[in-house]
Image 1 (cartoon, rainbow, N blue to C red):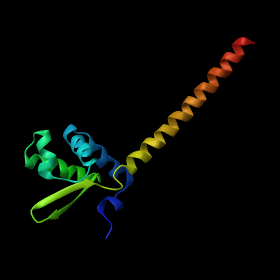
Image 2 (image 1 turned 90 degrees about the horizontal axis):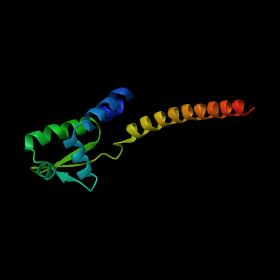
Image 3 (image 1 turned 180 degrees about the vertical axis):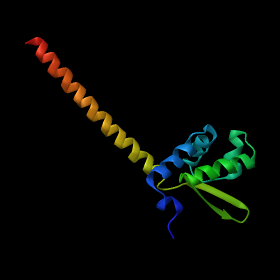
Image 4 (image 1 turned 45 degrees about the vertical axis):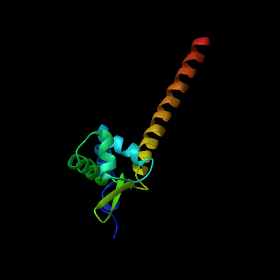
Length: 119
């Protein structure tokens, strides 16, 4: 069965991704998880937050498709989702392409203007 993230419209997935990354504690958790999987307590302790708060942050990260979790006994372990930043990378690449086109047009305009002034 596909994950709910796979069937959501791209805009909704991107919105959840940005919401998930909007908080410093959540970005800290992502930074920590970039080094490898971690339990809830391992993620909460360096941030100085209580476990219930950490779980709320992790739920938003999971809803954003950034992390996934698995439970073994009483320990829930989180890891970065393999496709975590694909939508964000695509969005940034599209904007970068648009900006580059605008800069190219500006550069051409300035070059043409400078050539006209030299004539």
